[in-house]
Image (cartoon, rainbow, N blue to C red; front, side):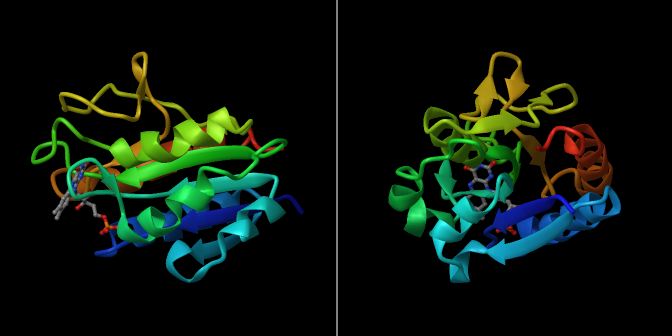
Length: 170
Ligand SMILES: Cc1cc2nc3c(=O)[nH]c(=O)nc-3n(C[C@H](O)[C@H](O)[C@H](O)COP(=O)(O)O)c2cc1C
């Protein structure tokens, strides 16, 4: 069975809940999914998977969630050759409109620079924000959710994104 390593960090639980839902969707699509809280996981574990889903909320105005922040310097040095990766993040479009979803950009860019194959870019249609590090052209580098303002859309967004990425892994 094809495997996915799902690595996430979460301070107040939103990203964790989203990771649980993504895990369910990918398992329903036929993958074996190993889920890791980055707080208690050795980063090198990521390199044991050829398929990755990475989840990080944005914190502290444009920064990574604290557990990702801890490992970021090491993360930036990883070689992602032959690894396919998808990114998703929780954020707040209203209170942090100039930094919405920044963490997805902060993690997705080094992944691509270090030879990872990025999948799962997502349309910005339906989102309202001013600026984001996660933007590439008119798309986000991964899925954005916003439980602070649009919690009612989260399940649907996760389901649609899971559907979109499920055939794109190796
Ligand atoms: C102090 C603080 C700073 C935040 N900064 C940002 C930010 O810069 N950009 C953003 O999109 N969301 C920001 N957020 C919103 C969080 O990303 C959002 O609440 C998220 O759901 C938290 O995820 P977690 O529950 O998994 O930790 C911030 C929230 C707080 C409380």
